[in-house]
Image (spheres, rainbow, N blue to C red):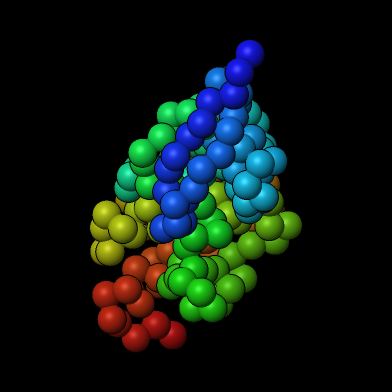
Length: 161
């Protein structure tokens, strides 16, 4: 089977790679492009550890074929910060200690960013609903939700304690 040439944009930069037709975007990100922040937790779209943003939509990269990224804008956890400047979600995750083992953290941060890109004033219920596709065995989610809500407030220009 011959490899397919893919041209896309990843984290704001043009990207090209060769992949097998059956390779998932997650496999290519991790194994071909060395973007290892996205994790494989379930390979069935149930845990959210591999979350990426494709053209503004939150996606499980374990369910998307790499060839499907052709011509699209993909944002991974590596593209959330702008250089040395953390995104408000990342700052608030640190501020609230909203992580423990860290395995799910990249997916949670990407999912939270996708939410806040659409709605910078979510209710707690909306934030919980949005993040329901991201499983975490360590945190209990309360610190995560507080971090997301404070990131939203920061993005709105409000003072965050």
